[in-house]
Image (cartoon, rainbow, N blue to C red; front, side):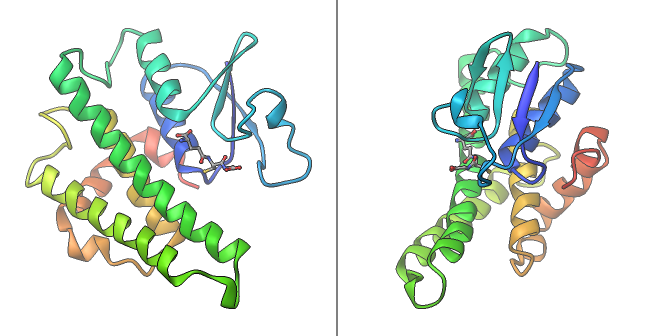
Amino acid sequence: MKLFGSLTSPFVRKVRIVAIEKRLDLELMVDDVWGPESKLGDINPLAKVPTLLVDDTAVYDSAVIVEYLDARAPTHKLVPDGNRDRTAVRTLESLADGLCDAAITMMLEKRFHPGEMLSEAWMERQAAKVDRALARMSHTLEKRQWMHGNSYTLADIACGVALLYLELRFPENTWRTTYPNLDALCHRLMERPAFASTKP
Ligand SMILES: N[C@@H](CCC(=O)N[C@@H](CS)C(=O)NCC(=O)O)C(=O)O
């Protein structure tokens, strides 16, 4: 399986971590989606990473890819089977992906609308999403080890990746001191080879 992706995209990192945890081999095809040479639009009309190529079929987006990978190998299930548990884990994944979307939107606003063209109202709207998502993650985790139930799931992978992405792009954000439980979660996650080996 070939995974088209960049080394900094949080969505790509989520997929790579899931593949490592599931002991599945992915060949990473590094693609700069923003660059003029990218041909990704030929296989994924949305021209977004991650895109997984399984035989000749393109699979996207990251939530669909991780569902495919989790079902492909029976070992170490990352999404629980029960409807309620599965929905809770997938909702936490959406929360984490949404945090990334808001952080990326802010970065793109700065890049494409620099200086006076930048919309403060749009930036504030995205920043509020990030703030609320952080508060919700921390509230959900409480004093437990993992985001859902008593074991490591896709919810931990997605939330950990989102937090570490926020740190990469917005190092001034004080989430580690505001939410010590999220800081502890990230320390725990970085001890895992899948997280350590995919650090941008
Ligand atoms: N919902 C998508 C989001 C993917 C996404 O936004 N990827 C960014 C890189 S982090 C991208 O490819 N952007 C290029 C573009 O929007 O044209 C997923 O989970 O896969």
